Length: 149
Image (cartoon, rainbow, N blue to C red; front, top):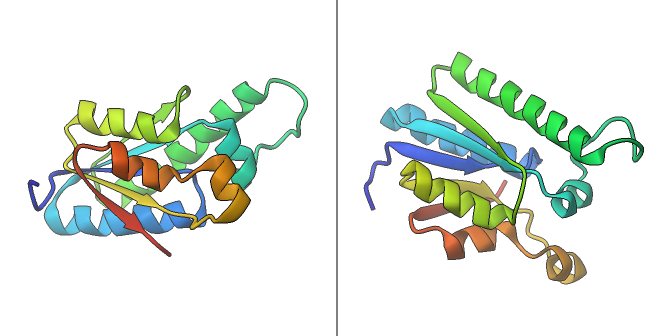
């Protein structure tokens, strides 16, 4: 592994766990002068299970609402990090498995480290939704730091 990393990718679902992962990655980026990438994958199973708020209820174009909300939240987070002096790129992916999309982005972007949070799901929720963090660890070719809050 190239350490210290010069490019760090953070997977976010906008949860408290992901916010903790972003802060951890931002701290590393500040210390090492690394660039930070943020990625969110719009996934309806994750979105509704974890309560990413989509205003407007269940009527209308859910995909459009999810896309708009993801864009807004990612832009706000990127702007906040830039204001703190961190170089940030952000991407919303709208198709595919979250962990496969994160692994693909890490490889394509030449990231040396991926940081993600974990919800620590167990039981039926883990069975139905799986663990995105676990998938990221299994599929990324670079090092992965899983942050617990």
